[in-house]
Image 1 (cartoon, rainbow, N blue to C red):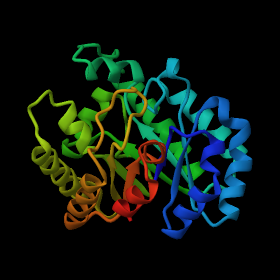
Image 2 (tube, rainbow, N blue to C red):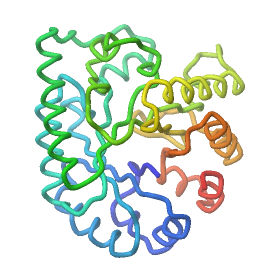
Image 3 (cartoon, rainbow, N blue to C red):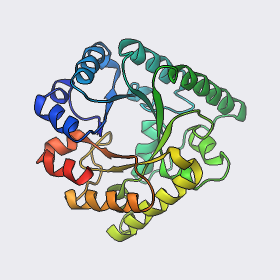
Length: 276
């Protein structure tokens, strides 16, 4: 369960912890720079209550928010700080996406594009991420979140274009962001719900072909996230159908974005039932 849009106090509510624990759902918890002092005690508490906790570092929005070639130094330093504050976390997640401002421009139909990294710059950032992942994996699982386009490429040309080196990383899993609500809602009327479902199934098959047993899918959205206007599921039934489609396509490692949306839209139990 991705969790980006709840405060840490809300995450620790006993009823939410009990719900996730009762369904054996892992918590994929966002960590922003201003939450560093809180994350260690929270992880210790949640793990003490029986939850598996993965940490999902995100740097300041002005620095790009997500992991990419341009943010490599800042992201690796911040992830090191996160691990130092919460060494008992079960997993660390690299969210590989172009900078926030770039994705916001694309979403709104703009043509803004970051300056492409040189081949040498791309290789240097990729090597830095490989070294960091190797260090982090000594004590925990490491995985990524990936743009869906990357499962369709041959080689690394899209990874270089987006500035998101992924295939070379020695991670335990890749979770492809196959959000049917975004496929449909951001298609400007080109795709209906059935078309979005077809893309989900295609992502599942391509992810399995590219990543094998390491392939996973992220499903969503239940409500808005980083942009504040993401198209959302109409209800839990759409999530349940996405889960069924992904499993039929051979993907069992599934995540949903996000717990905060479930709390806001409620009742949480119906959304958790749709996932679990």
